[in-house]
Image 1 (tube, helix red, strand yellow):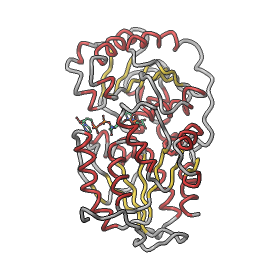
Image 2 (tube, protein in one colour):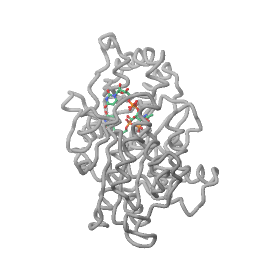
Image 3 (cartoon, protein in one colour):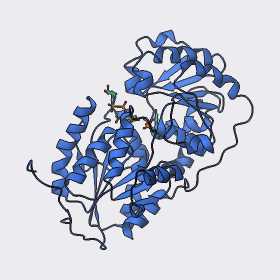
Length: 375
Ligand code: UD1
Ligand code: UDP
């Protein structure tokens, strides 16, 4: 594309407004993207069987445990294009996504594209699509932590700003978008596609009993995931691991370690009570999540899944972009304070907390997205 090219109107994929799209393009790149996008691809393939469904994997996540395993577990179609972007600084990762995605979009000429969530691949893809004048939808739109030191917050704001369709999963998201002045006609409350995946695969992961393979009783152990830079890239990780080691005297602690975090644990043997394991595939992880006594996390998706499953969740962050999980769900925001991990043991006593499942987290969000696309 020439340097001075303007934003172009892009209807060359064959379909025009009002007719059925003939080419749809879906961009994924990181672990949570696969879980959110899989049901959207499935629903639209079913509803538009004659259309071309192009799946682009940016390659932001590339380890088998963070990528291929998810394609298998989720039965996601093979990527049509792999961009092999890999790891790097935010600028490098975003720039590589843009450079490598642009020719793919120019050759595929989709009528509509989809991006999901808030990772760097999402940002790069949104910028390429809007600059090529390709209409795109943002799945999981409107989440805000109101903390602009999180790169995810920047990525979400940009992805929302230029999207033609903003697919929101909660009332909180609608309010955030309205506050930012985004027109109503672009916003659709459809529910949570990450929960669609959970609902579809619940019978499969419930039958796995992964905890027994690890020698653990159901509802006896604490499952841990930590990967946010604010926690794992700095001095807070050591005290958090020490506190988890202490917690392991009360309940077994299982910690599937994200590769970012692995790079910062130089001496895992120091924390003899913690059971460190490789990152798990979706089905094994959900099996553990469903059978856990409690979960300690800084993940966005895990806060939502535990709310749906009714499993007590403790979030080691100062903010959450998913306040519905603390208001009506099982999520407790501990703050970014490792010493608060000591509060978990007494909170695990007794019955699990009462909770409600947020409206439209019912396994049918992707069908509602397809309704909007076909309307
Ligand atoms: C990214 C997202 C984050 C999301 C998380 C989900 C951004 C800015 N961050 O964080 O929002 O919650 O994914 O897991 O997009 N690495 C590997 N193998 C891999 C991938 C990464 O070893 O397959 C290592 C590399 O050392 C890399 C580091 O992990 O530098 C971080 O990866 P990156 O994709 O930059 O960010 P995440 O921490 O995974
Ligand atoms: N997950 C997984 N295996 C793991 C850790 C997480 O399958 O070892 C799943 C988790 O159930 C959820 C998704 O990965 O579906 C969340 O991804 P992550 O926590 O990496 O990203 P975030 O949601 O924080 O952006």
